[in-house]
Image 1 (spheres, helix red, strand yellow):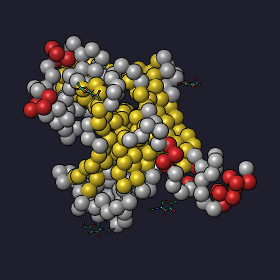
Image 2: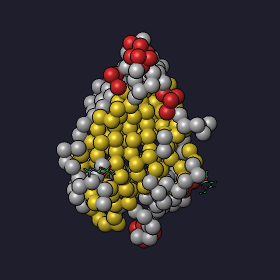
Image 3: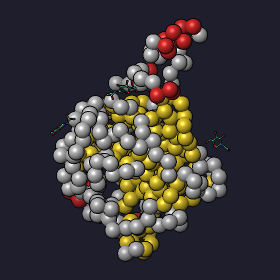
Image 4: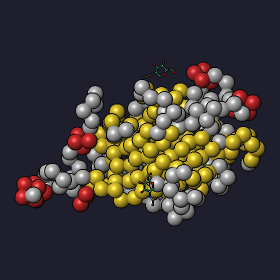
Length: 286
Ligand SMILES: *[C@@H]1O[C@H](CO)[C@@H](O)[C@H](O)[C@H]1NC(C)=O
Ligand SMILES: *[C@@H]1O[C@H](CO)[C@@H](O)[C@H](O)[C@H]1NC(C)=O
Ligand SMILES: *[C@@H]1O[C@H](CO)[C@@H](O)[C@H](O)[C@H]1NC(C)=O
Ligand SMILES: *[C@@H]1O[C@H](CO)[C@@H](O)[C@H](O)[C@H]1NC(C)=O
């Protein structure tokens, strides 16, 4: 106890003196989406990536048995041949440990994403104010995930860096896994089931044509969750993934839905220095 207090006074984390403390969570335990936590982002038109889905208000979302399910349907709406949903969290946070326990869809050209978007265009329109992708994946390659940062000049001159497709010995469509991202004022790290697989130092000039005035910008402002399943588009270049899925093929999708057991946000206790991230590295981290 005394050691803990002394270490805390010194600004050093001792046993139990510093930790991630959960500040927000949605377990999706009820029988409907909690509209105090989430709002629907609707529409089609490709979302800048030539995507094929139209996002509806609520007919593609179900909350039951302790999970949120976003289901892609083959149906005409808004000039598109597929419907899906895209949810934005109403609260937003700066820094923290963001986790989503999810089971991913399976099927050609399904593109689930768990990511964060800036609450305000402080540094300009996309991607000048940033974007943090926690999990992206393709429904025909069930054992990879990737984490990405977008920033720099506005579209079409945005830049990105990230893990790229990272293979795991898992079929992410078969079981739930926790997709995590730890964000401090100096680094952003990506984790699967608590295992860190990629880190980016953000204590650097990320300007690339954006009006940033300090290191770490634009990743120093509040960001909110985005949960969605897209269909097709530029994430599936034909030279790698073949021709785009047809509605006939799509009617055979084995698992056209993303299931999320919970999402949570933890923040570093007392806003103290977040210096001992390595504590959370698992023993088998490579
Ligand atoms: C909601 O579900 C989680 C497990 O996902 C459980 O730990 C928690 O107690 C449940 N909360 C309520 C209010 O039922
Ligand atoms: C991932 O799946 C591909 C085939 O889809 C396989 O070639 C690769 O070895 C798998 N990687 C791991 C780490 O299981
Ligand atoms: C970041 O680099 C740009 C040039 O790419 C420069 O104009 C800007 O002043 C730098 N910002 C900081 C905070 O050093
Ligand atoms: C990060 O935050 C800590 C604690 O608030 C502060 O001491 C440190 O100077 C910050 N570092 C940067 C690079 O902003």
